[in-house]
Image 1 (cartoon, rainbow, N blue to C red):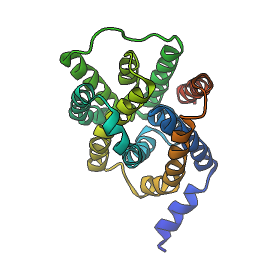
Image 2 (cartoon, rainbow, N blue to C red):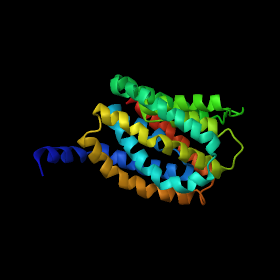
Image 3 (cartoon, one colour):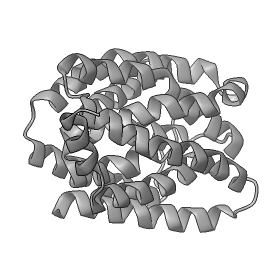
Length: 251
């Protein structure tokens, strides 16, 4: 083992990695249960622990690999007419948002991430939802905003989640729609950080340590979907979102 690798490994074994591991387990349970939650919870926490340019790429890599777990079944249950245009627009806009990640001030971006998570958390708690129709132009607009956020912060969820949860579909279809959306942009979102050179050996090693925890937690969360009452989940999820947003905003 080279001295460079030994130094990186020594730097990994810190309280920050332990805190990240705990957050990954919680986020994996949320993702498996509801179909979302990974980026919204981990983006502010990883940004507070390591800074956005070091933390967001870990999140993007994990999102890409986790999406494969939930995609096959969700593809059959999702509303393709709505989700595919949203996903296509998000995929096009994601590299534009990534320019912000690569060039913006790290502290400012971390606080922006925390603020967005807080706004989203309070919006969910208020039970406000969009109740209009879903025409193609609006689907494309929502996808574009989500893609810009994905590239810049690792979070594409807030606008599309509020938009999709407005419908009268069953919880199973809502969950499938979200899983399919996140899967459509997962691969695209990794390309700009890779080209920009911020996916380095440290990012890859942190991902390798944290990813197994996520891969175990996601299927457990999926099983909890059939067991845990929604009201319990909502209270826990809201508490975690507000805490994560405050951490990134104030750290």
